[in-house]
Length: 136
Image (cartoon, rainbow, N blue to C red; front, side, top):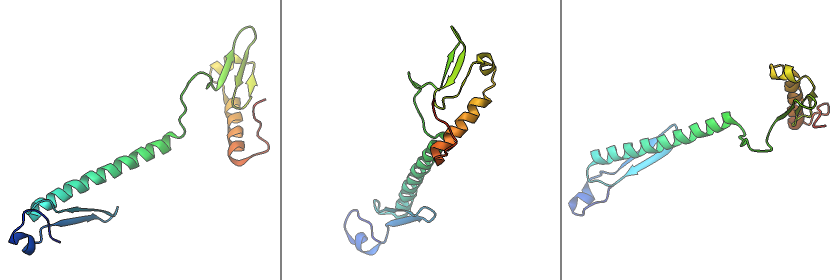
């Protein structure tokens, strides 16, 4: 493979262009900028490293987004539970409809009933489970 550059006898008799292929990813880079094969090789390796870095960054972003899952902005109207402490006591999960009047227990961390209700609700949403109950 011949490289470009200044004309003359060098163009027709010297093969200085370089093509490098990264076998695991299949990314191929060709460099024909210089008249020296050594400089073309270093330029091709530099471009290949840059392309591999971009591929690795895109993969890292995809992995992070997969781990993060669906992301919702916490704005007004996006709350999960309402805590009412006066004039009556009530905690209500707005997604599942689960409610309890034991506000202090919920504030102390006893949310097992809410977790169970959410798991039922989530299973029903993904598998159309008839025993799961939605909001009341």
